[in-house]
Length: 371
Image (cartoon, rainbow, N blue to C red; front, side, top):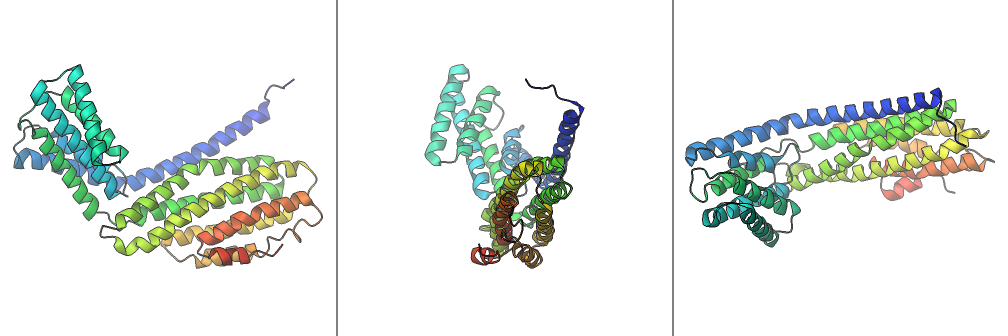
């Protein structure tokens, strides 16, 4: 027979919700701050596209130019040129099909069906990109549903071309420092890992199950920023291949690899936290493990500073190498297999963190004591 939740359970749930909320708010503020400049760029591009179509082409209501520019650029600093191109072509195809068919057969429910079908098929023929097909269909629907404006049967199509061209030009010529956003996200993600480890170490040292559970919650809440870091680094590296940021390709490739390794480290730390919960329920000396986790957290803090500044990771690598040399289940937890299991679980994330700090896979494994 299950018991009703008591005040302690309710307090624990409230504390976990607070941790989750604070993490989400911090991540949201980081996203808003990072999006300020690219949103301003996209807004200016939309205005410029409207201006060109209105006064250079003489179209009275060239809102498709502004729509195309805004949709193609989006609101992130890392603008994948392929994605911008797909969006631009998709918008142009959809608007062109809609304009032509409405001019020939008028508008209505069955005309909309025909336009949508033809636009999507044409987009699939042009390229495999899903964004291209989606935008082609959406723009075709809008064209059929809106009344015709000045500019002739292909007026809205030329507006869409203007918007797409301006968006592509912005993506190519104003990427800024393509390292900025991946670096900021890297620092945030690695700091989340360090704070998770610090919370776990505190829980192990004080034998506080709530702290260990809080570390587990914090680790789960970090998933969005870890995923965003990987996506931003990948997009920035693709953009650097053809933009003015070619010189940064090496660091961007390193940031992309670090994102994968830190994500793997966080997953391993969550496994360690889950395993620590039943160990704390018994009479086991986990103090040495807490010391190892504290050292691990300190090394990860150095790594966060390194990735934020674009350094080669030497400080983090040195601190993590010193920790790795102590992760030996033969000496830590000797005679207690449950404590030794925690030490074993600590070896994998330490190796991954060392690789993220710049160590080769071989050197990272060699830093551990042999079993």
